[in-house]
Length: 304
Image 1 (cartoon, rainbow, N blue to C red):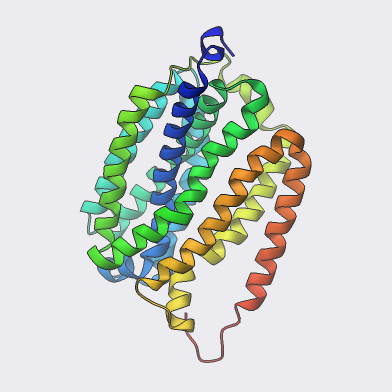
Image 2 (cartoon, rainbow, N blue to C red):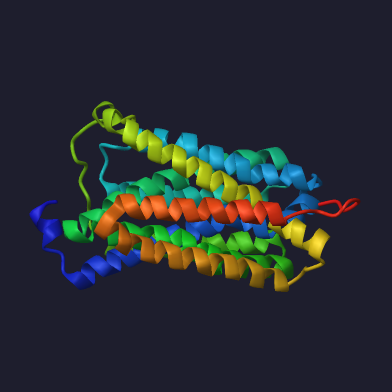
């Protein structure tokens, strides 16, 4: 950490973290918003619900594959410049998705948006850790990543409500508008974070270390089980339980609040013992997913 970064006041550091949190919030809302308006997108683009669900898969592939590639390509750039550029491209790709009536174009846009979110996440972690002392790095990461959790708690339910009222394109335009605000805040509040100097090749030896790969695989399992259920939760609630309209947002809100609480507390626990926090959190998540799947038994003759 440089002297300039270490000398940042607590207030300035908190403003920078709040901006990164907001960025994660809006990008997380854009990622998960499809879940809340899946039926509306399918009807508007004249595709089936499973085909519309592929938009979630496309986004995930863009994030998992394109995110690391973009991060490697931009590793020698100032982190603030990368954040601003990523947000600008995020706005452009979402406008393409809103304005198109072609499912194929929408699918490609979702891949690109996913890749941009992957770049934004990696860059936000670096920027967030650079503005706090070493002993607060876990909390800084927790604050930044909690933006995604809060997007699940608030952004997705609110976006679903807007989508059910004004159409799915209206909810995506709201994402574009909020992202423009984040761009302005990033320019004003996030300090410059020069590159560390090491290239992508030097970083690769750390990225492919056995411990890192083990954590990545664990994350793959946890998020696969989570999103397998979350992607089709709205069609499930509508077809199986008879819940529809604005009340859908209440169920998404309950899920998101629990996720947000876990993210905020996870950062604090990680500063004490990261390994133990990871083990306990993952085991509880997988156990909950197992119970959730076993409870989702569709009666014969019911179609989701």
